[in-house]
Length: 278
Ligand code: PXL
Image 1 (cartoon, protein in one colour):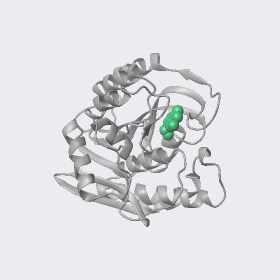
Image 2 (cartoon, rainbow, N blue to C red; image 1 turned 135 degrees about the vertical axis):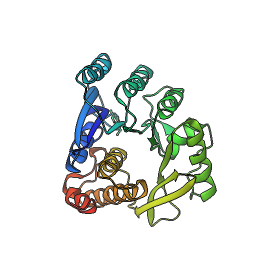
Image 3 (cartoon, rainbow, N blue to C red; image 1 turned 60 degrees about the horizontal axis):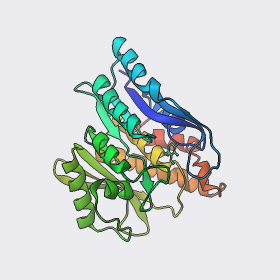
Image 4 (tube, rainbow, N blue to C red; image 1 turned 180 degrees about the vertical axis):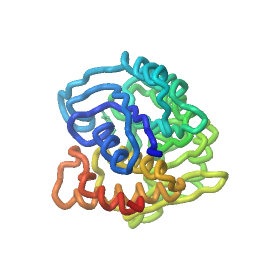
């Protein structure tokens, strides 16, 4: 039976992030990807001037309620970038409406990087994301997002296992059933994710490419959902997602110097599918 995912993100028309990434990657992995677009923008907000923004907050709940009336069930709900506290509250409601006991809820609390909240968000935005993360089966923050939600110091030197444990324990206490921390590295060769599953910390690494491209968090999250829906265990899925994302960055580095344009995830899809055994 084909799996069905509900992806709840904005659609940034240009720039390869949010729904323009989630739809093709999750679909390529073999799952159906239904979408609740939370806003339509001309580009993402990370580096372009004067982008257009059409808010779709009013449509979020009616879409979910329509799906419920139709009796549509979901194997996963995947949320990412959200533009306001109101949207966070609505997405909490959508999760209550659409989830059943077998639905996997994955929350990426997209709001910050490199020690800083994206300038578009108010300082207390992490409190809102905390509430949403508490409803999740799996949360996938980066170090900055995790530290902001937990109120612990952001320390982006070389990671230590103690620091990773402190953060994962904090995320678990926050209410997320299975916390994942992304962007973890112990040297300059490998980068990946750490997860806390059944009391045990596990790691998944791929080659570390020394370049930051926009939208790679969404590439990683989408590839993770795709692999989980294909029945891979969490650690294996994290490894597939890390390797795929690393491959996308490596490929893009050779021809695209503009980091705001996102990565060539399209031409790495065959390798992703191979890792999925397809
Ligand atoms: O990739 C996350 C993302 C999604 N959507 C919008 C964004 C960002 C990150 O900046 O601006 C609109």
